[in-house]
Image 1: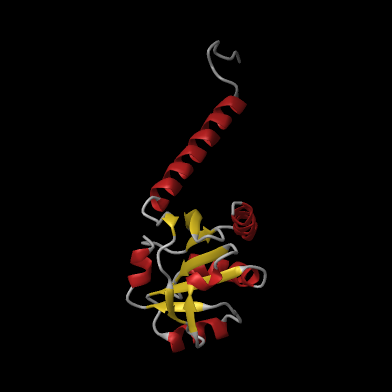
Image 2 (image 1 turned 90 degrees about the horizontal axis):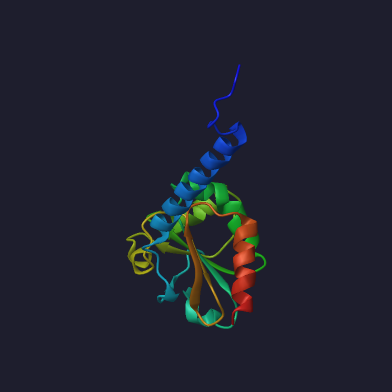
Length: 171
C-alpha cells in the first residue's frame, strides 16, 4: 500500500493533537483564573474554626498560601493531604466556602485526619472579595502581601511548593 504524497506521518498528527489539547487546557485554565484577585491581596481576617482569630497582615515578611476549598468538593478532598503537608512547612490559611459553621468544618477535618487553619466562609463574602467562584482555588502571596500566583482547580504539592519558594525569592 502506498502512502499519499502529502500525508503526514502518524507522529506529526499525534504531536499536533497534543499541542491542540494543551492549548485548549491552557485557555480553559486562564479563563477559569481570570476573575481571581491579583495585585495586593484583599483583606483576610476571621475567626478560625478551631478557635482564635486570623489576620493575614500578621504574616507579612514570608510567603503565604491562601487556599479556598469546600467540604462538599471532591477535587478539594483529593488535595486536602497536600495542603496539610504544605501547612507543616509554610504559612497556610484556608477558607472553607459554604461548608457550614465551625463545628461542621472541624468534624470534616477530624474525620479526614487533617490539621490546617480554616476560616469558615458560610456566606461566601471572603470568596467574593478574592474573586473565587469555583474551588479549589489557591493564591500564593509574597512577603509583602502581593499575589504572585493564583489558580483554580487541583494543583500538585510540588507546584504549590515551587510557587511558594519563588514567592519567597521575589521579596
